[in-house]
Amino acid sequence: MSDNATPVDDYVAAAVVPGQVDYYALLFAAGDQRERLSQGIALGKVILNIPRQQTESQIRQLKLHWWLEEIQRCEKGEPRHPLTRELSPATATTEWLRPLQRLVRGALDDVEQQPLTSLQLLLPYAHHVGERQALLATLHPSHNDDDLASARAAGVGIALTDLLAGDDPRLDPTFFDVTGAELTRAQVAEVAMTHFDAMAGEPAQPIIAMQASLHQQKLQRLAANHFADDGSVHPLRLLWQAWRQGRKLRA
Image (tube, rainbow, N blue to C red):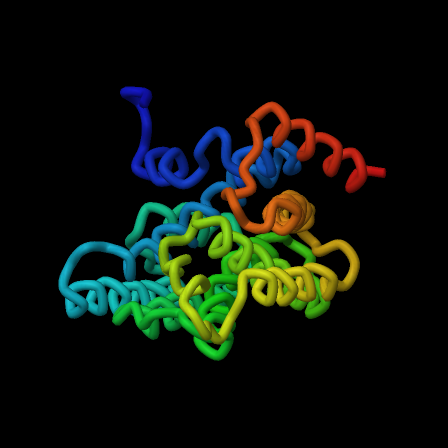
């Protein structure tokens, strides 16, 4: 880490890690948007990490209520957090605060960490986590309702893929193997693929299409191997997949 790193740099470095999808997706984002998108990714991860912290649930709730207050302050032009202080003047409207608010409220619902043992519990969780992609969509200067719908569909598919791969610790994979389990991995994968297929064209932010494509390929690897591994690939192959998808998006 550089001695000249700012707090925002530190948040981004912790969120955008080499060898992971977001890192390679950002490599092929438009240069004038890359900084704003990396900050949006970092902000989403800051919020989603709060319910997972090993602290009293009341402390986690306080932190999330602080964020609800921070959203109100951003609407007034008075942000306090390093990431919101960077994003607020860089965005033309405050529309990005709406998916951020939904992300925070979903995290509040998840503070007690109720076991995700049915589709009725899994889907609301995936929908609120999927607001990460809606947040990225709203950081584009020109987006519409279709772009947001595509981003949210991608977000649910990505969230479910991360759960199946073990990248999101909110799902205990052993419950799939319990005799008489309500849900199978294949069923979750099918729901994830349905959401990827529901994306209406290319979202305003090409990075969302990139994230969705790379996660969809990961989901296909998981299913092909009967979920016996985490679906990960060598970083060079992930880079090649991102490069190939980037070429398709520019075509």
